[in-house]
Image 1 (cartoon, one colour):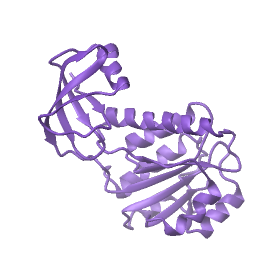
Image 2 (tube, one colour; image 1 turned 120 degrees about the horizontal axis):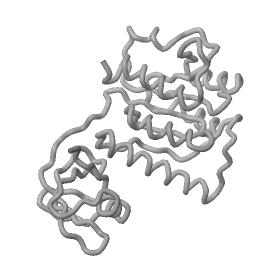
Image 3 (cartoon, rainbow, N blue to C red; image 1 turned 90 degrees about the horizontal axis):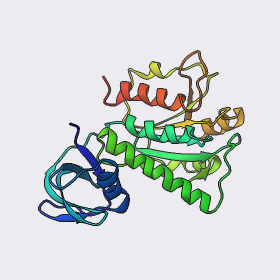
Image 4 (cartoon, helix red, strand yellow; image 1 turned 180 degrees about the vertical axis):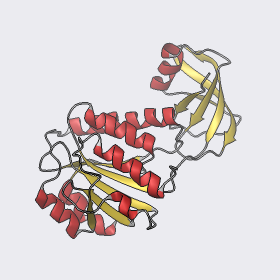
Length: 247
C-alpha cells in the first residue's frame, strides 16, 4: 500500500505532535478514511520528509506524531523557470500540475497579447491560491519535498524587463517557425534555464522579437504545432533529459 504524503506549513520536528490543517485533515479522515495508527509521510517544503503516525484527533482535525526525518530531496539538478501565458479552463491547471511533477523550480503565470483569460482584483488572488493548491497536491503525489515557487501574475513586458537580472544561465522562447531545436543543445551544459511559452495562439511575432532582445533564444520542438498545454510539458521533458535528472 502506498504511503500517504501530506504537506503542512507547520514546523516539523521528530518527537513532536501536530494538528493538521482543515483540508489535510478532511482528506485523511473523510476521503481516505484513515484512523489511529495509520502511517503517513509529512513534508513542509523545507527539505526532506518525516515519518508520521496518525493519532486519535479531536472532531475533524487530524493529529499526527512526527517521527524520523529522512533527507530525501528529489529536486532536479536543472532549475527550470516556466514562464507561461495563462490559458482558459482546465488547461492552465494541467500545466501547473504536470510541470510540478516534471520538476520545474518556478512557475511564472503571464498576461500576453493573446491571453483570453481576464483576471482582476480578488479573482487574481483566488486563482493564485488555486494554482498553489494544485502545486501542493502534485508534490504530495509525485514525491517532491520542495514546492516549486509560484510567482505573482504579471504582464509579459514586466517579465521581460526583469530578464537581465534573473539568475538563469540560458533563456528560451518556443517559436514554431524557429530553425534551432532543443536537441541541438545536448553537447552544451546548463544548470538553470527560463522557458517562455505563450497561451492559446502562441506569442505574437513582436512579443518573440522583444523576448529575443532580452536574451531569449528562439527554439522549436519539432515540425508539429503543439497545443499550449502540450508544448511546455514536452519542452520540460526534453530539458530534463538533456540537463536534468532524466535518463
